[in-house]
Figure 1 (cartoon, rainbow, N blue to C red):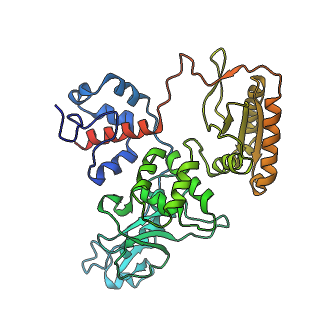
Figure 2: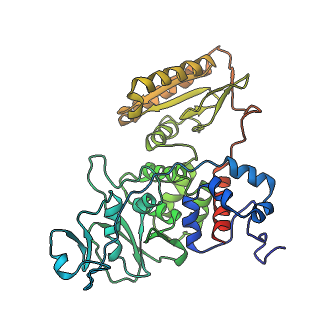
Figure 3: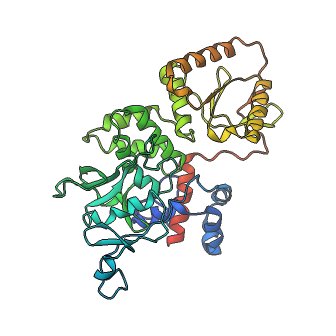
Length: 402
């Protein structure tokens, strides 16, 4: 039985799910695939293709963070049940966030989640939503903490209707445009723009940093497995008349699925944009010719045989350093040239680019035999693409909601 949309009885196909209510997307972002599959009725599981069941069982939780605790501001309540009374609100135990909105001072909250929640009452009903880094943070994307390098707070992105009357919202960076209903998702009681819309808004939030910032935003949203390159490209294609769409198109052309931190993105961009070297692979498994796992480097040039690593703060411990040296030795033993960057190196992109070029030239002229491969041995499961992982989670979300 096939519906008019061309999807199967329960809406699962190898492509996209049909449009659904925003709650489905909310569920899909937090779903634990293995637990969701175990909770489904046997009759539903029996309808799933065998290969889909096998893929779901291999699906690991996405690399997300817990946004933290927050309390939504409440109005004054004469009964004191749903909010403070007027007398209570005047006491030191309550903090005012906006007109007639209060939160208890002793509430156990985390930042920046509470700072985002404080703005919720200021959003016009049905025409306002949280966007940019703040929306991505609430969705669980790592690296979107709302602070600058010096620790200062960044304003919370807010999308308001183009014809709205409100001009300023303290602590917010406002974007005015047509907000489509399906671009707003309820996240823990806070209206947020969809992943792709939030990524687009965050891309254009820092005009001075421009293209590299835009690419990093997209790559970190993909690392959190909130969207894919294909999905964002399709979103940008629908926004041909919007300002900043040219920046988004450039970011799509240069972004790749693979970097797992902003510094890894920055290192890859120096390789491509500054050193003008061929596009590398990022975080792919490397094996020996006998099928042993060698490592998963941050950057790999499969043509020249170059590995690049960015060693951040967590690499400073003695234990991690020993592991880094072991991995470097294994890579070199397999015939790969190796370079590593540490904190501060990327401040001088020109110098890093020259170093990358030298390493690649040395690799191309090296007489050492290559005893490494990207071909996966029989014991290693095939890699699920990002699009496939997103699809499987949305499939489980649909079955769970239904």
